[in-house]
Length: 527
Image (cartoon, rainbow, N blue to C red; front, side):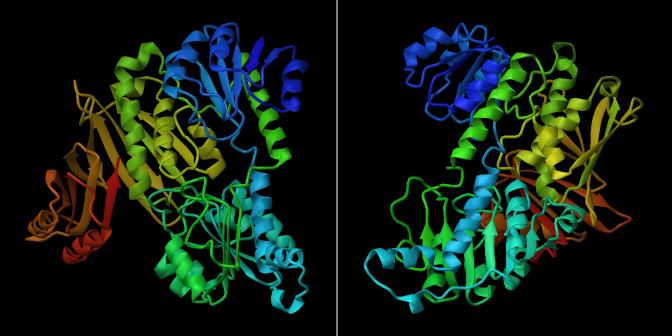
């Protein structure tokens, strides 16, 4: 087997390949034309961020079986072209978790002990001990937002300093939090109130963008410290600057930025901040780990074995594509909806496949559903290849049942998400010819709704006039209702209205509408 590495790469990774008998073409300064000339002879290709793997490169790689990215992001690889050609694309998503956790601890210590400021003072020829009196970590409450792999490593290290640990993660089962020794909170604001130090380890999503803004800073303890080694944009930087200036926030340490590179920001002017240029993964060990892990994954891919970190889609077998293929897409969209309907609170999912398609192997529908659920909330690219891998790390379980007999439709699928305190049901089928998916049931109420990009859903006690109020308020905001369905339950006395809209609703307006119609629950969905 022959592997091409067209840029700088750790010798440890090369050794992994050579020890297994691979011929390695290591060309650290390979240009685009050389890449095209050589790739056709190779079974594997390993890149970092400097090489762009275009459709032309992939098509030229007639023998390519796998492309490995020695790192997390795969934006420099044409995933669609790779999938079309049957080339596995994989990465090394866990290679930098230790480095990111250690960077977090380094920033916490540097910030609370004034290390960076004291260093600058000493180098300026000063000796001013009293100006740099710090704070101990022992006994302080560390609030960890995001209890994934990096968050868990930070928790382990913080415990060694005697810190008390509290956490927030809507995707973390309470049992897992308990096993980690974390007091789990289900509300961001409640956790903000008790924190001495806040650190975030969550992906940037619609929910986490500006997660910490004026409202959160206002209710934090006086003298709180704020850390970000996750993603830029989770802290509202203008709000953070205001609360540093008024003394509410005693200090901040930031390693990640919304738009990089960065040379200025609202917090650059403050002495009691520590700023670093995205160094979370910048250790020699992380680089070595990325190289060796990627080499091992590429070896597995070339040998036809399962690669856990595959990031591109795998084609459904042709013999079942015609019948099952549309339901795969419908299941993934259903997952995206359920992630938003359940508001992240999912421990397990029950799937029941009814009718004609229940005669087939429908395992891929569960994988597609997980891909939709997890892609909405994960920092990783999740698809039907690696969805089961990431679901396992989150502790999300899928239970599948097949019922060949169906009285309602030729084929349909029911999904029920479950958590400790709640459940949510959605049943869908596929419109013949168009292959659009239809919602047949929501929250145990029948409907017939073909969702579009922008959806608003309101649940309320059934009564006259509510639809008119919703329409009026949306019309005043120049938002058109493109289609609407009502799902009601006469025996329960409540109803759910589903609206396809021309645009998303402003959050303030959405809350106003919910209040005006006395909604017992409401959701704004984007697909």
